[in-house]
Image (cartoon, rainbow, N blue to C red):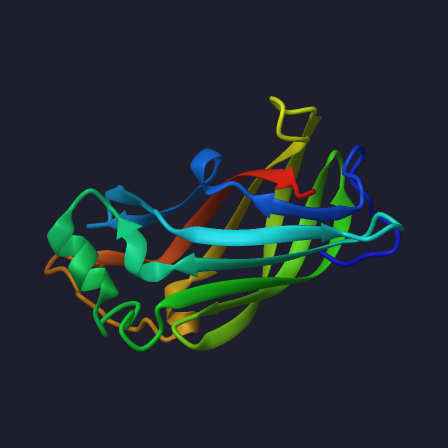
Length: 184
């Protein structure tokens, strides 16, 4: 996130590392037209770097091989060349390019790379503030969502259903619940 005018109250200068133990990177996608499959990634990392003037930037990585949809066969298929092609592209990345206020929330813009394809995305961000923490320094909380089209990232497999529609929808909602700690 980079901006000269939008700051986050209480978020002091320094590097705020994402705590994967207290964070979640999840997604939902339409399945068989009538329901949604939910999943998450077990391994991810990132940091929010806040400059002295309060401007911030975000860099994050997601290990797509760590997908967990609670179904091993489905996870293996999503790792395959039909979807993530995780053998060739094991990491998805996000690098912020800007942030702006949106009422009480924020819009974070950035470049998201999945399967070797980079596209601009916007995340709707709720900033939950800063807490002094439990003896290891302050922590900050964020929740963000975005919707991407899988076909924009080269995931073009179509598995049409006999009665219309497809096994897997095109739109994927990504939801981030992030706790980040200020590094000493």
